[in-house]
Length: 358
Picture (tube, rainbow, N blue to C red):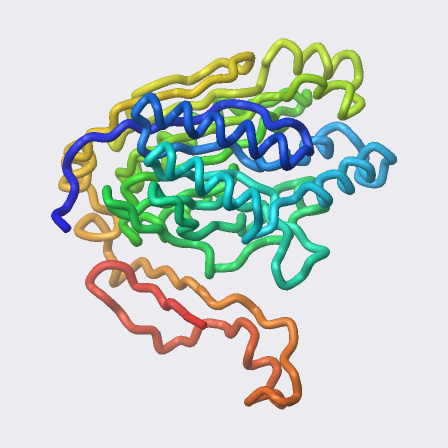
C-alpha cells in the first residue's frame, strides 16, 4: 500500500455518558460514532472512561465515604468486558461510520475479575477491535479503583493513514511515553480526558488549559495530529456526587470542563477548544502533507535525536502472577515476572530500545 499523504477528517467527541449505566452509555456512544461518520469523520476520539463514567467523585468525597463506596460498586458492576456485547456494538457502529474509533472505558480485567483498568479500545472501519491501551499509572483517586497497565498495551496500531496511538489524561504529559510513541512513528494521536480534575490550590480545575498545553506539546514532539477529547459533567452530576453548594455552582457553570481541541503537527489549533457547557463533536481536516513537512524539520526519533547519548528501554512483557507446577520453569517463578534491563544493550539507527516480548 502506498504511503498516505492525503487528507481526512478527524473528530473529537465532547460528551458525558449516561452515568454508570453501561448499556445506555454504549447506545449513546454508538449514536455519536454514527453521527461523526455521517459528517465524514475517519478518526474519532472519545473522552476518558466514557463507558460507563469516570471516578471523579474522589475529587470531592473521602475514599471510604458511603457515597464513594456506592459509586465504586456501580462503576465495578458497569465496567466493560473485553470481549463482550458492548464491544460488539461499538465495533458495529465503527463499521457503519467507516471510521477508526478510540473509546475511553473502564475495563474489567480478564484474568483478575476483581480489578479494573482505565483503558482505551481501538476499533477499525471494518468493525474489528484492533487493540487497546491500559493507562500505565492511575492518577490520584483513580488508584483506588484502577490498576496500572503494562508495556504490552503501549504502542501504535495500524491504520491506512499510518501508525496511530492514544494515551489517557496525564499520560499525555509523560515525556517517555511521548517519545516511545514518537519512535513508533505515530501520525494520529488520540487524547482522552475526564469531565473534571483538580489542579489548582483553591480546588478549581485547569483541565482545559492543561489538555490544550498537552496536545500542543505532544504535537511538537511527535509531529502527529492530536485529537483531544474532553469530558463534561453529566446531568445530575452534583446530586450523584454529593457536592457542596459551592462545588455544584462551579460545575454548573462549566468552569474547568471541556476544552476538546484538534491540533496540527505544527502545534496550530485546527478546531476548538469547545467550552465546558457544550456537548458536541469537533471536526477538522487533517492534511498529512503537514505531518511530512514537520518531520523533515525535526524527527525526534531520527535525524533530530542523538541515540548514542539518549536511550529508552521499554518492557513490553506483562508480569505473571503465578504458574502451575506442571508448567516448564515452574521452579523459577521469578523468571516469569518482569526482569530488570541488562547493561549490555544494543544500539540502533533510530531508537535504542529493548522490546521484551512475551
